[in-house]
Length: 58
Image (cartoon, rainbow, N blue to C red; front, side, top):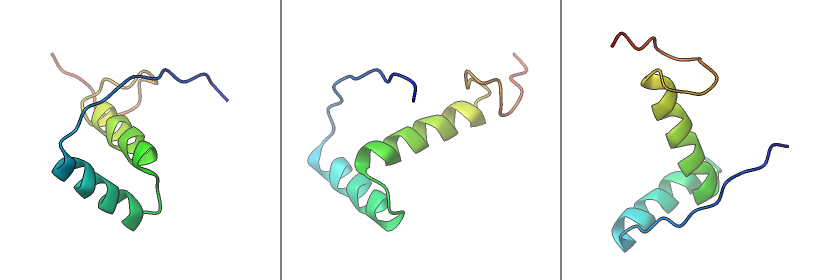
């Protein structure tokens, strides 16, 4: 397994509660849900380090 970087993220209680509910509905932890959201956003923006995703035409 690759090493993961840790960092602090501050969220409002309302945002955290919404994220926690969403994660539970998809059988993920909050951390897992955040990782999934970030990976998807990177792929959709064509910025994922794997090079997979939409092509960035800038």
